[in-house]
Image (cartoon, rainbow, N blue to C red; front, side, top):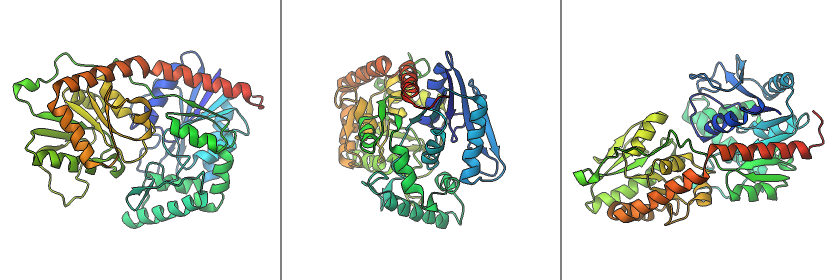
Length: 421
């Protein structure tokens, strides 16, 4: 089978779960199928879209745009390059506000499956789904016009903050041109009859309620050869402080860095000895002093994160946004590290509280502090949860499973399509 994967946000090395999934899942699919990934590079953009610092092991066609394209130019060139490949099916993968327009145009020509990685079909702001520092309960399904108004407010806020310059989300809003007044109708039409792959039950329910034809739950996987336990883990019996790891895009306020700092302040006030390693470059508020138990590491590479996991005592995933999956917790478990995660859809789908991880209500500082203290003071609990988490991930969350289920969804879309390619 010939499969085209549309991934305009792709770059290398991978900067998140979506691109990691494309490399891993479709890398396996490409072993037995002819596969082409189509990505876009905006040469005038500073955000790294379509930049490959490492040569991918997959067949990738990077389409260059000298200036930021309009919607018709952007989608038109992707359509033209896809037509040259003549696929049997198309997977629309990593994209944000351009996604509903891509769905609309591509399924005129080919059977289409959409891989949903976050909230890109529910909110033009994706994981920035915030209103006055709290989560928004609305979505494009219930109120698309209101969502466009909210996106406009967000754009104006970013332009004011950045002196008229884009961030990655507003840049894609400009390409998608979502303020042309056709976004509400387009997103509604795109969801009807959709064949989608998601990572959790909540997203499946939402898309099904909007008229999606088939929605498959397929988890991301973990490279358990790379993310594996080390035989020379640090020994706390030698007087080492309890080490807490907070890995991920911690400069993004939706990831829960402030919640973690407040929880750790409670622990410090109790006189407990620990250190927090956070992959953040600054404090959530630049005016906040850096406490003595905090080490700001900035963004780290994959190997550096793994080595820190191997030499930590627990990992936190305190996200405030609705994590669709959350690769960080799965990678930590694969290294035999006990995990504490907030009750967002991804962790709730796969982690059983008290068995293979600890779950706390998102944003609940006291509950997070209590969970950390439990692992800090109960060696048996920490080992039991680490053992169970390791077993769960290494037995269930494999890239080979993700690839097999993804290919099954693609073949179903082809079989049920009325389009003859």
